[in-house]
Image 1 (cartoon, rainbow, N blue to C red):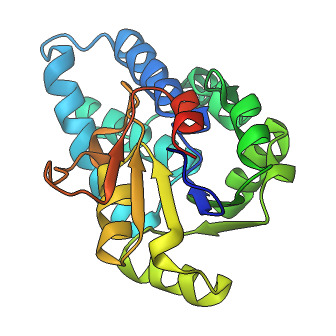
Image 2 (cartoon, rainbow, N blue to C red):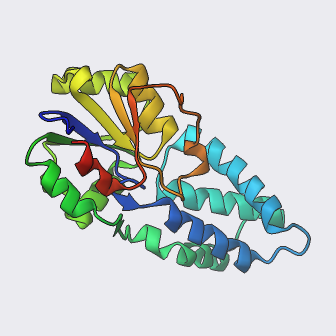
Length: 230
């Protein structure tokens, strides 16, 4: 049976539109361009992951931080900073990110349109505010949401603050996203229900375990399957 009159809070990146796959394409192109003489792609990727993890803690998320990580990875591998010409080449690899192109996940637009006829929809996304706002604008999805929240991080307090600010009833509120670390586990810890819609390209830094026995987590395979439950 469908739940009715619920509040559905949606993640954006890799839930409504593809995101990490764009970054993965850039990383693959970066490693091919780099053509390091001794290290294989696996070793370079491990180094890059470590650099990126440290930078997200210090500088947050978004394409600017990603480009910073590429530059630092280059400098560490080459044992020197990138020249201005090399910097331009790295930036050119990431043109799709810099231009904030958006590729909607199949079925998202029509699913949101129907869900909006019987539920309240909110958007909760993390990252650089200007980049995320631009993605919302380019996606053409913003009108589906009663309110849009762009935050620096998604943790338990983020969800508790959302509940307070929007006067939500946690038992009737569902966080919908692809990330166990940012969308599912902290939402559950704040007392919300959650819907996990996996994305094969979910960022490695968003991986986490989800309690398989948690009845408050609905697991789906495709975004459009939300219509079977809400």
